[in-house]
Image (cartoon, rainbow, N blue to C red; front, side, top):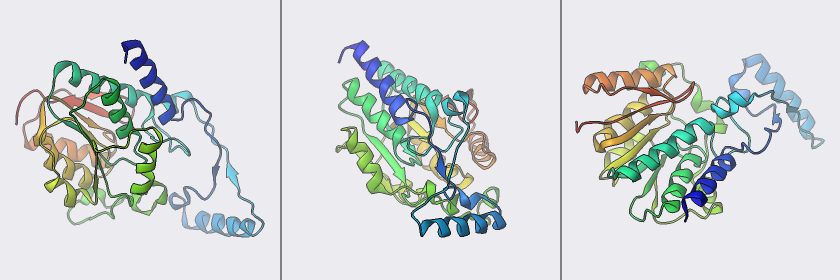
Length: 279
């Protein structure tokens, strides 16, 4: 594929995966009901059940700015990724850098939701003619775990496990890969909690390590099991860097292992650094 064709293809793919080509539609008022107070949850359920008998649904219009959408500050209804264009741009830059510099290793995302970031990484490998690297797709495919307040006190207030919107099945993610023509034997699924799957994952070296586990425990599990496999020059991308529990895990891991590479901010949610030495 010619360089200009690669650029156009990847740019269109980013806009499609992030649903940036279209306006965000209204959402059913029941969609994020778990985040409301007990009284509001009950009222919404009563109303929605009453209307359901007449095949009616109450929708809520969302007033979103271009900045919010570009920075991935929303939970979208139809997009295949919620990370926004700025994080997709950084991911593209990371992929192009490791290919240009010959950084050894595969790519992985831990916490994939509908699979959009992994789909993009696989597409970039195809567009640039890389036939050796694989993309690992690590997720429970059942949502986030209940917080273990004893082992991970920082996660004690997490309610992510109560939100069905965050639970996307492996079958749906596979369908998403397939609809872009990118489901093949170089897309490797690691299904289960990170603490169970990552210690024995069939991974040798990594060039891109993208963490999107939201919680302290999920972030620490990924760092402890995967960061030692990241090649010098590889990218460690933290999608939820500005979430308190996730950032605490990152800071503790870096301190414990003497990691002092500069952390670079991507947007209001995320950051990354490049590994410069073999730890």
